[in-house]
Image (tube, rainbow, N blue to C red):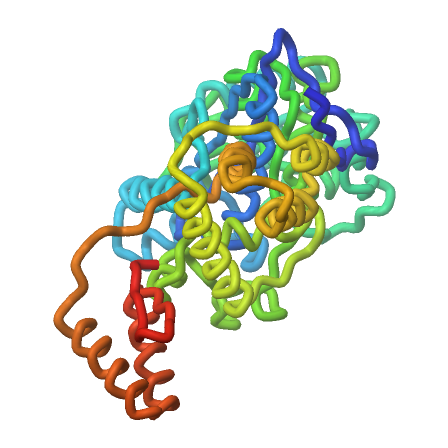
Length: 455
């Protein structure tokens, strides 16, 4: 395996490491207080692309992805707990609500053809791991109990703090993006909470050596990644928004606990915009996979759009690009059916070289388009190359079209369109065609009339 990916820590493109043919991966999962939007999901497709790229050349991957279900403070509203606030808004028990959004998350991953992780540990079920790690960090001099009863990590105790993000301690000013508004007991403004004293809080709290409370945001990923991947992670993945403070703090915790560098490669997916703006509830442009389905778009159209862009580059997703990707998927699946039904695959070195060079998926897709149009490659070989490439791309290109009867309304529209074409009422014909396509049919015109198929 020669897969190399840009490492945020060293700011270089580095080979992916493995031990005995096995690569360990950790991907920061969702906070399950809402459905994941397409911007969140782009990161999980990145993780899946890395996994598939390793496995296509015979490597093995062990992937752990956490589920954050204990809540943490909002970056937007100081002191507001995302889990408890949403549970109150929905009038539900917070853990019951978390399980519902967690189930939706797994459904979304399935719709995007993301391979299931080896484990999805929940933060709420890993409290003992966190308490054990915090206890060790205190004994090693990296953490302390504050005057408010909460436990804090001593940022000055970890000398290389700031190497991932470039945010060094001497440049961080008081008030620079805290997760909590009541951290009066810490010794330095950039220290962060490992365990929060419950105070007046009555939900989602646990007993600990420091009294009732709940874990800080960052400690969960350190505790779970070290526990489930035997104290070392070959590839650690997350969105660029997690680079600071989450991954910076996580690195300090894990390395201080183990005593050495615990992650070989830090991979971050860049921000996703939609129609030119940041996705947010206030601007009304949060897009879910269910929104694509409501527009009769294949969810894998989103995956194809993600692949059309480098993952470490900011991307602007639009409805036009999703519709175009949906048409491309339909075209390629139709071509695959025309090229035969063999499931044989052929290694395409040009495609593989693009993927192994810092996950250059756009160049890999260019290669597929060249194969599609080539007059020098036979149909059977084209299909074999596409099947090979799809093991990495995960676009379900060999999917066969639905074979089901059309409705009476669709048949009436088909008849009306034939009549309009016969009478040269072309604008009426186009309007009816649009209605048929919106209902899921694909229309092909010919001199004898038209043919239809399911998209």
